[in-house]
Image (cartoon, rainbow, N blue to C red):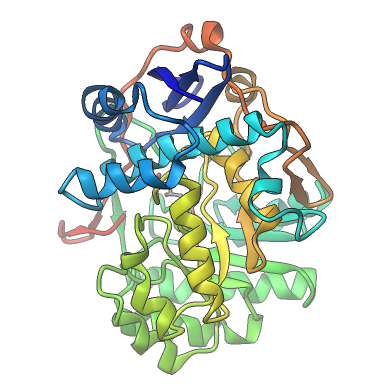
Length: 402
Ligand code: KDG
Ligand code: MG
């Protein structure tokens, strides 16, 4: 099955998405997500200017060889732009292989290991009461696992809290918005949120929380300890993880389960975290970590240390990424949970898909390939719009982690 053409489609049905479409001489096409939030056009150029010329004429079945060619062959390894571009190619090739085999992708990844893919949704509110009400709403929608984020008294805004509850979109401006952050205010407030949630919802509901890289290791250890009575499913991105050894300190102090890795792009970013069992869930995802081939390598490596997957699934990961992720989750033995932040109806229309939500879980569907397509005519009606994630400053003006 020869690759005869490939092109990049950039569309903004409410938010920007970059999609790679690969066409073959068998009349089949494959799709891969290449969206890197806030840096979309860098990946589009990497694909169009540097990768596509190397793809045309190759055998689309040689997924591993093409992966190695793009990774080793660039000389410059790793990094989010490179790995998103490789991820898009890899996802499109797995889509093609499954279509050529006339099978849903999960069958090629080892077949079904579970009947459904448990997801968590995002509840958020301006204060504890509003957050609790949102958690109740998510429960009524069928969610069995819910991430809770609340506004912090004394801070005008914080990560994960928005006025538009169902479609929270952090990349919200043509130039980065500047937010103010206070760790002491956040640390004083967050345990109260989870105390209130346990009082109202009891012990059974799976509750998650995203710290979004804002604490130092010792502050993260303190928060993990303070949250222990409320038995969280996980505390996410407690501290930036470039220094993987930092998690040793958190681990020494708390039994709150830890999740990390949405910004990672290769197995090297999480090697020590996994080998030393410093985390419980690895959040790396198809689009940012070199596609299905590399994410499966990370997940299999994580299984050796009883680390489970908890793939990133925010709105900036397109339905193409979600479809691919769900097929892997359906087959992967050490699947843990999948994040699910619904896309808007406009996005769903541009990317018709076979996956569906039912009773707190997603199902990848039985369509051949990864089950997600693109309506190119519709996509063309939504031109690219520059949009950035916010940045954070401490109250004295120091630039901080967003
Ligand atoms: O592009 C950045 C978002 O995907 C990220 O801020 C969302 O942290 C996030 C999450 O857990 O969904
Ligand atoms: Mg996160």
